[in-house]
Length: 151
Image (cartoon, rainbow, N blue to C red; front, top):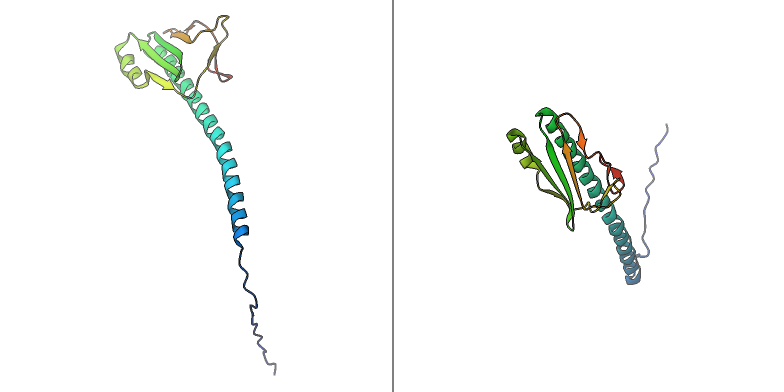
C-alpha cells in the first residue's frame, strides 16, 4: 500500500521590510513629474481635438447652407467673420421657411478657430458667400482654416 505524505511549508519572516521616508518621497516626486508631463501633452491633444471638431461643425454648417439653398430654391448668404474670440458665422435668406431653420445655426462662434485663409490676393477678415438656388457659389473661392480646405 502506498501512503501519501503531506508536506507542510512554514514561512518564517525573520525581518520586517519597510520603505524609508526618502524612498517614498522619490516615488511621489516621480509620479508628480509623470503627471505633469501627461497634463502638458494632454492639453495640446484636447485643443487639437476641439479644433478638428469645430472645423467639422463649420463644414457641416456650410453644407447645410448649400442644401437649404437647393431644397427651397432660394439664395442663402453666409458670412464668416474673423474676430478676436474666433470665427463668427452668420447666415441669411429671404425665404421664411429657411429663416426658421437658420435661426438654429445663426450667430455661431467657433472659438478655437482663429485664422481664415482664402485664395484671394488681398487678405480679409470677412468672407461673404452666396449659395444660389441653381447650385452655384459666389464668389468661387477656396476657404482654408488651419490648413484644411472647407470648400
